[in-house]
Length: 287
Image (cartoon, rainbow, N blue to C red; front, side, top):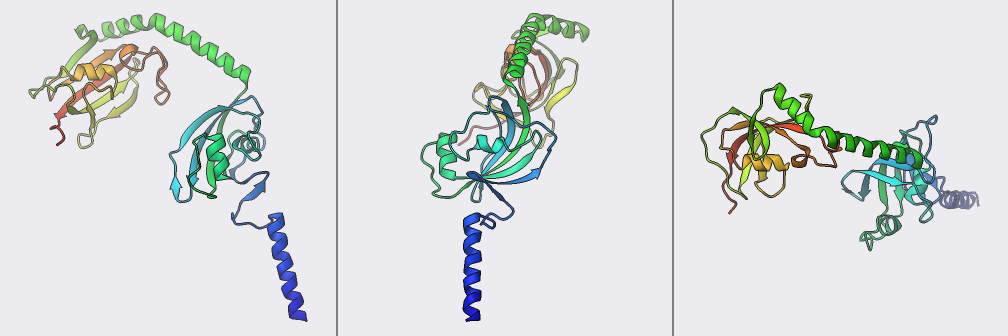
């Protein structure tokens, strides 16, 4: 009789555990309305996003053993699309917090990502999220106005910035409209369009600060000439170089990062840059 009572108590405890989620299959996670969560970093004194705010997050999605490419996600925080969606999860975070959320895979994939039928059955989707930035709609509008004003100013002064630079460094040679100077003269062949070439390069702002480079001869940058795989100025100049040539070129934004700039390198729109390029090799065509 005592053994039977113990078994009944054990069964009741297990049932309560299942019903009230005091213990569940996701170790270390807590249950929220519609998703599970585990915080890794918490900043309780920081602000939390509200509906209508724009948020920037680092997010990596995982399904089973597969990790999807991490993304920098920028979006307006909306009302719930469904109970327990990602917008609900973001409202639980403070600025600077990092956490892992477990979402119902089918709803996340089909309703939030809008990618059609979910191929993984009942497998959940894990999302590793860090909340990087919160901006109100008004703050964002002000920032966009300032950005547009800066674009106009840069478009207006870009030519004079280039002239000042080439005058300062006595660069008066022009090839295809690009100010340039040969730093080294090679004696190899010239590449033809659609051939794959290998180069070493350095990229500078006009204040001579380096923002990108590939300088290891054992690991050069390769690209197919004339296919738009690289800044237009490099495509143009390399097509006129010989193997062994090294050229420093002062490049207008229209042949570099254009009217959009480059967020990765913190290059603003209409920013002229300097490329230092050495043509190492022309690769034989692929069989």
